[in-house]
Image 1 (cartoon, rainbow, N blue to C red):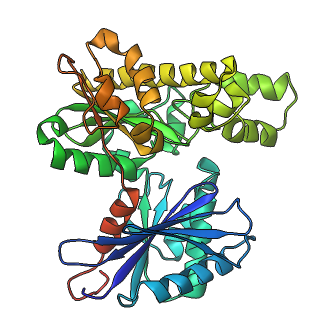
Image 2 (cartoon, rainbow, N blue to C red):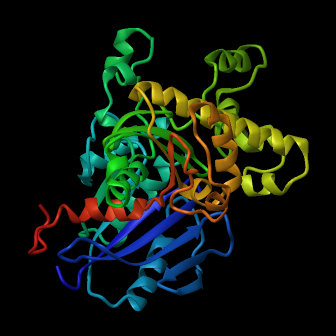
Length: 397
């Protein structure tokens, strides 16, 4: 495999994270990473290569497809990472439904199945499709692999996945799927390496970023999670509402006369921290704000995270470890402290100094529950799943 490289795409609703990896016998090794924020004009490719950080202006503009953006990005990468030809592209795809239980090579049938799931993940699924189609257009013979966020949660029982709705709906796919699976797979792997004894126990991991959820892990296997049928469910997020009484939706449609489109836009883009505070979707802005609405939004965020953690502990039959991960979970001591304050009755106690410096382990010596900060690396998981389709002779299986 020497000299071959993998490119990974991890799209958000308005950003594209890139990963570039060398294919080596011991597994993919990261060469660099980048991000393109599609909201900014002109576009910029932010690249990190070891200690070097660069901002690369892009001439391309965003339109219905991403052909020009990806074409210019590929040209720049080819000129700055001369490690051989591109072997494959791996994509994070948020929703895999019940069809995909693991990574899948993308062909016409795979792409059609991914497109059929757009209504269940309208913020993220279309971005993956645009990227897949752009690579198909620019490099039609280049293998592409999809890694699904939902696949990690297929280990959950039907009892956990079922809604109390007519049985036929469950059989037709109306069930709890769970998301952020690539992140939780990364966390489970890192926990096995850094704290194997804790990894074998009952762990609640909190992926806290713009999108946020929690997952109950038993010996690294998903047993329950806060997100369900869609990426709206669970705890409040930057702009998404989290768990909501369905009667509220009925009320907004029937009594308030809102259109289905207006309700969807509200729940996905104008709720969560932004909706409650009326100030910002960014928890950092709310932490810095003196406004009572900012404090209330953060209080609600922490309260709901703690409540969900206890709910997931019930599925596990107890709780040994809490793990914080992702942008907020890894870098914002204030949020971790707020969450853990609600869990003090469980015997959980933080070490304030360790928490303040974002240490790997932040529980106090007397704490009955371990509290860890574990960086997540979704792009590494995508690269590993993509490389699993290759044999030593570079033959795609």
